[in-house]
Length: 173
Image (tube, rainbow, N blue to C red; front, side, top):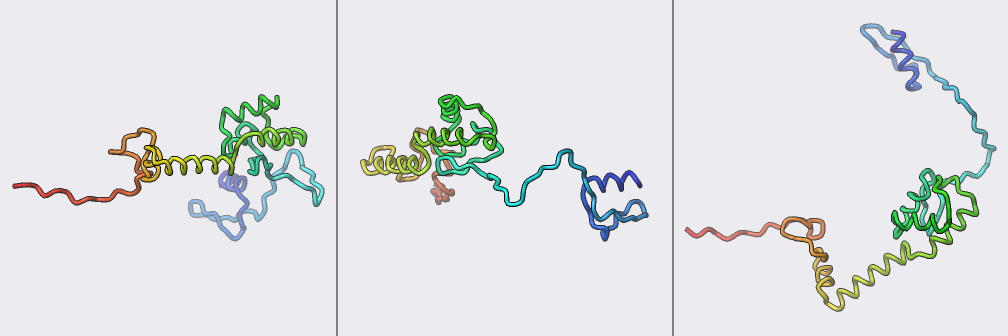
């Protein structure tokens, strides 16, 4: 019984109004359980804490390494994120550990690339141009079919949409 009570009390703080039953006997748990902390963190009241870092108009996560955080920006993938880090000779450390100078240089380097809205606008205009000149790829975009040579007999349901049943021919007798 004591083992169950100590195990339950170490897991969660429970209300004393909730009885815990075990094989016909019931007992109550303490109302509050305190866990000792190894090092107390002192934050003065009203201190400013940074939650997310904005780079290229996007909030990138604070708790990930810079290489992976940069991938949250549309237009920056694995290779380009590594290239940015190499160009700046920046260590791949956690984003919240970056100094102000490193953040400023990172923002400047990212602003050299076509990202986010500009990239989306460029791609949309390229597709519109293909549709206007009525080339094969433009026609496929217009019809909502794959335009890079994929087969369409069995797959490409996301582009074609939901299946539409067509009445078949009547069998000749």
